[in-house]
Length: 512
Image 1 (cartoon, rainbow, N blue to C red):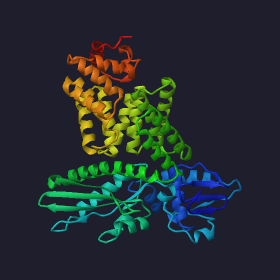
Image 2 (cartoon, one colour):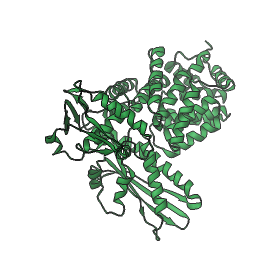
Image 3 (cartoon, one colour):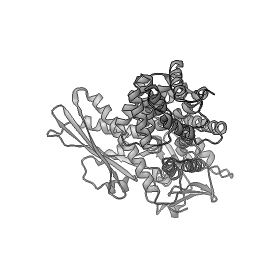
Image 4 (cartoon, rainbow, N blue to C red):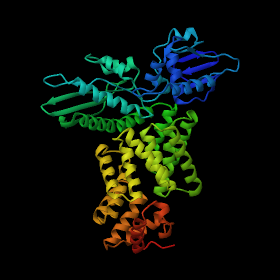
């Protein structure tokens, strides 16, 4: 393993994403416990207060003491060398110390940041610059930045620098590369606020702190009629725009180096998944399994693994449906157990349970929770559109789909959200819209079975020729029958199932 090594007793912590080992053998340790270990190691034997640990491991969040205690206990168990030696020492009423660090290593150690050790993508959000003619609106500016920090902190795969650290750069003219070095982050989000009368324009830009190059830039406008509503809307818009851009930047960054960490495998798996072929989907599943093998508590890896099966089902790639669907359900339930505070994980795993096994109640609750945590979560809104279709609430489905697309118009998953919209139109009797939306999906993603079925159903109900579309659907989904339609789309309203069944029956889909 390359990178800086921090040694204590029989253990070694690797700063290039290699994690923890004992006598050269990997030690299984959850991501939170590993982050705590990194924070303690960075102090080089000095005491670290509980508040400092919480600020670095759970930035922007209120965490109970017993939550920290659970992870400290797991860390102590992992660091048991079998000889009665303890490395994590409690300083009563104050904090913790890591003892036994090799002095020759520690004396040359640079700042050891938890995000770098874990090799998670990391970001600092700097105070936004006030560009108004009368710069007196720090409360609005700071409120927006604090909400962005809090929102990004809920993304499990991302490490966000605490407010106190990033706000130290207020009114300082510094190069973002210097900020990146000093805070140990890969990315910096900066911006400005300009107010003219009752109008406000927020400009944001995401910068790769290692190179100084721009990853993303945009602006958002609003009125000060309700400052808190404006603050919420701008925060949701910025987070929804930044998160997919960060993911894409991470795919590109990690593709240029060997995979050494769970996050490397996670990013490569998503890149494989988005090539949309059965071979690429199978490769993605292997990569997500590799991520789980390195970090068994990485909720997003389980959620993404479950999504391999949702994509396989929706494209007709399943080879042993009963076994594969059961495994997808297992991954999704594990993701929900681990990712209760992670919006993207809740959205992905909740949809997997709803679509794969028809557990609409659990899936709906997970997505609702994701939207409470982050109302602008485009992924949760998009797949949440499907949940509303299943529940028979077509207008709510369209509302969610349209909001998801507005927040993330170039998202790689937009085709799936649009397909949900086509079904919502169909069940509202808007067949032309249903057909148009489904055709748009297939122009981007041919072979996506939900859209293929909707083209056939809407065309039949409009009285248009469907022979060519039916022939294509038979090739793509030879097992489709009216009697097993609910296995393909778990509609809860009998009227909706009857409408879709009748249209497909009219097009020529066999009853049995």
